[in-house]
Image 1 (cartoon, helix red, strand yellow):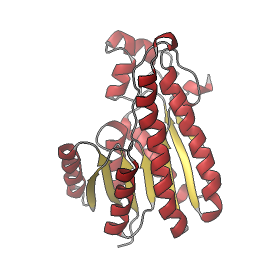
Image 2 (tube, one colour):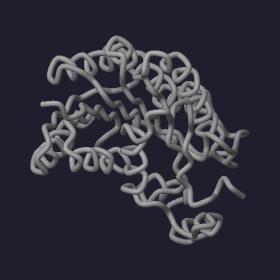
Image 3 (tube, rainbow, N blue to C red):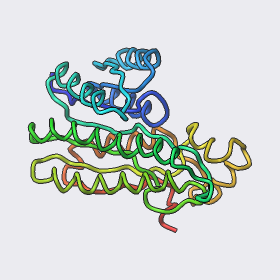
Image 4 (cartoon, rainbow, N blue to C red):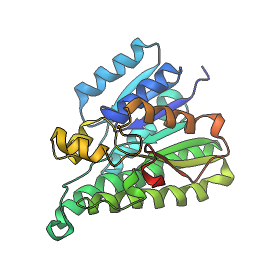
Length: 249
């Protein structure tokens, strides 16, 4: 079977889940990864019900041995790795800089930055040897602008953008593409937390978006599927804002 092999970290909810479903509907072989065994097995079964070959592999991206194992198991199961979507992330504790802590910095960066770095490291080793592959990192509009009250999260996503550009330069000549998707507000639980858990806060936030609404997870997933495809085969080292024109202001 020649359909592409796709690995998605942080795949169990929100954008990650929508991305797994989108790739499965396209006929890809999909490996979903996350920290919750029961939810992961349920998602894999849902993907198989759509007709896709699918597996769940448990991993916490903060730990290199677990990241390495997921990549190695994916290759052992399917023979290659064509697409990797590094989606695992956290917003951490939202607070003004004057109230931030070293603990929140460590917790946020260990997932968003170290997790992305470790994933890139082991995914690129496989793809460079293959001479082909596409990696999509999940950034955010927070990787391109500042957000008051979210300094640590913003810093972590700026770091993801830097990792993306550097990895793209290292992989370009070998046929390995690395890009980022930078969503604006998306209709997920994270948006509720950013809005302080209130409908008023959410409405106020969305009023700053020219499109006057949040994206759906599937709208972000469709952008990821496009970036992974041969239709984007000359596109690398870029961060694509999917944000309802927020960063155009």
